[in-house]
Length: 153
Image (tube, rainbow, N blue to C red):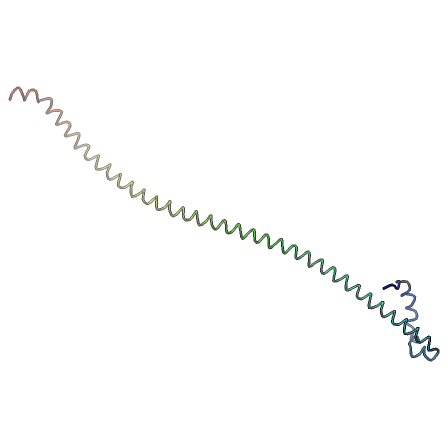
């Protein structure tokens, strides 16, 4: 982690060299072999560290996308819950309106029946009116003659 990128680049000329292998360097010097093993280990460690850093960055990006998506999902769920609540309210209003409509229809039917009964009563009163007017007319004529009939009697 503390090896700079410049140092890693400088090591690459040795690491890529086919003769820079512990077995080959050991023939020249045992101390050089240890240094060769150490340089190859540092190079391998830098590669692993770079790979880990790359994957960590990708993981961080993925986690940010997951968090963003989770936030959007939470908002959508809240929107759905709100819509469900509105639907429930509208359903309740619909049920009340339907019950009110049914009651109004019953009232309308009752009032129509009452209107028919009243119309029958009015028609019968019209018939009775003409009879009553005829009786009143007869009584008025009888009253007009009462004084004369009483004198004659």
